[in-house]
Length: 185
Image 1: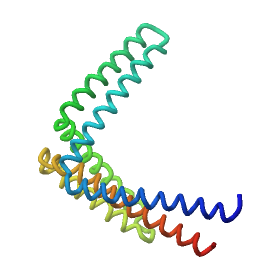
Image 2 (image 1 turned 90 degrees about the vertical axis):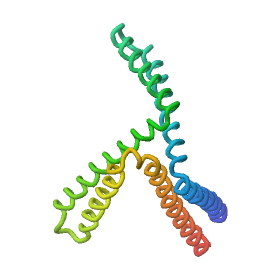
Image 3 (image 1 turned 135 degrees about the horizontal axis):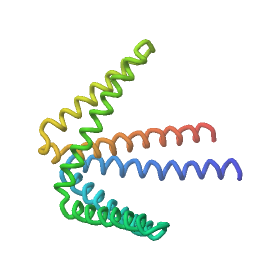
Image 4 (image 1 turned 180 degrees about the vertical axis):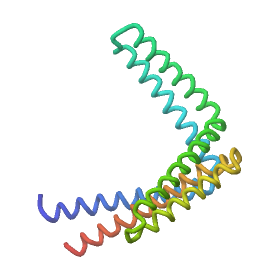
């Protein structure tokens, strides 16, 4: 491969990456503007993932070495399929549950960040761990306190902000890579 073809390949890849970044940012803003619709969409998606996992479990049941293992795997697969179908067709309930799980995860993450801060507080920059832990605990409280009402905005907003930040990050490093290639070429 010649240096020019490598440069062209990198320019093409960064161009595609910039395009994906712009789509991610646009979808992120859309999710923030329509958090409930985004949350419902995510809930339906999670429900169908559970359904397909159930079918995989059912297929896995046929690899069982005994009747007990076959029966157990079949029952688990059926439970996944039934539960997933129920959640996919009752996305409001799924969204409420998912929101409560996110709040619980944020409590655990925030508490662990605070604990880690106390272990590393002598190191420079460790205050950011405490800051992260406190903000995460605050977010958990903001989601948990008004729950289930927070289900209407929490998941969609979190996903939207994540898409915006990830898209912006992708845009910036793709632009930097493109600039570096231009400087080298």
